[in-house]
Image 1 (tube, one colour):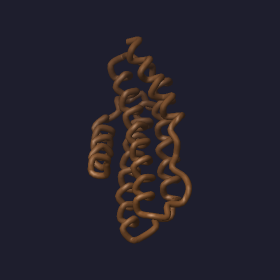
Image 2 (tube, rainbow, N blue to C red):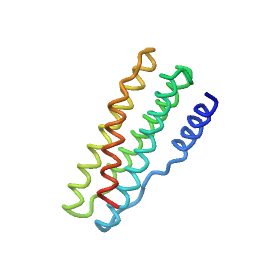
Image 3 (cartoon, rainbow, N blue to C red):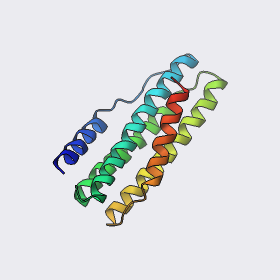
Length: 145
């Protein structure tokens, strides 16, 4: 139990410390790099929420604490989506990449939001949406090394 709580605390600290990609992207390569940074940060936040919800489900965490961790992950995802959305795509190829990343971020945010709502209602969150989002983010990162 103590190990799980420590992992959740460390994961929460990572959520707070995640940097957001900022600044212009003058080339497709630079834009794709910002997209990778954004997706990595999103994956970290989804996994943090997943870890917290899993700890709660196993009786290794408390609902109010879990709600805060998941809410923080949700806020971070919203910030990532807003920050990446504000970066001007440098060309038409980047437009397609922007749509892909925006969809991934929207799905991740939706899953984490649903988990937060369930936790605050003292219901068991459906972790399948979190697992699917994490998998989709990992797949995207594998396709964009």
